[in-house]
Length: 198
Length: 198
Image (tube, rainbow over all chains, first blue to last red; front, side, top):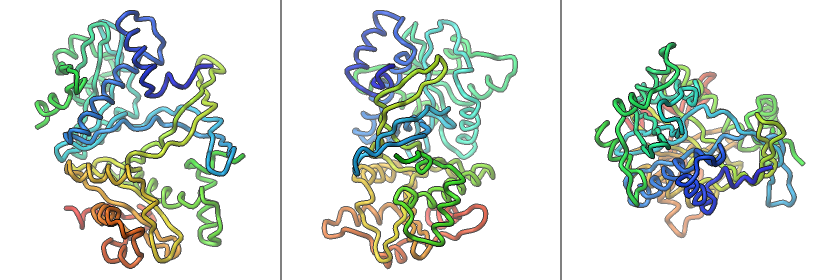
């Protein structure tokens, strides 16, 4: 049994994960994806508060099976399961355009395995582009502590090539753009969006 | 204890609700909001499949507290709670623009009570408009079986007027546009979007 705190934005826990991130790479799988997620959420909060963009992480899709009502006002979910997401994790509005992206981090030093993206998510990316939205993937290589913004078309193309099972670190460096970090926002990813899409 | 089926898109259950909707207005509160949600989800599916738009319902935000791992592959959530949403329910991309909206249905014949919209959702609507997105509310008066598209600015203005606690049915008819229904899509709401925003 694991406390659900590991799965939600609980600052104390995440700060500990961040410390662990710097000191020790053997922290849990659940925690592994959290530091990038936290960095993006913090950046989105900053962008929201400074009126630069309105971008949010979508809630994790959960299939609710059973609910208890211990009292009139409160519903307690007692059986539920995580669902495979059919869209990407983040979306919103920026400079009049729809923004849509997925974020992933890997410990692997040489490749980003494409199996980390679900086929439904690739279909979704194609649709976003088709309808005129801006779509990309934010990829972090934790070994180098480098975070790249890669246009969704690069990801789609690699995904559709049957001989390609991964995007190499080299390819990500070439096709993507390194996202600068700062105190606020943590990840200055909209600067890259400005550069690449406007 | 209530089966969670009442809260998710479970077709059998929803069909029953729809029948009840037509025959009897005393069905449960949980089921009450579902027929509009189902109509919008079906319409979005149709718009998605016909390549007209890419619009999705966001997952319901749920705070996960405790997770069991009965086996390696499966995580079972055993304690979780519904959270108050900080954004609207639906968003996506249409004709190059970001689309963002909330949907509500009421049984009341004369007014839509503004308390059905959370303050955070009003703030969110303002931000979407500020950044150049298209934002509105889909309101259904179940007593008349009429569904209206009302621009978010009308909702925001009413919300910010301290003397206004509700939008009257008359005001909705004047300020909004009646959404035509059909077999597919169930609600032709993008026709109204074309008319009002393009």
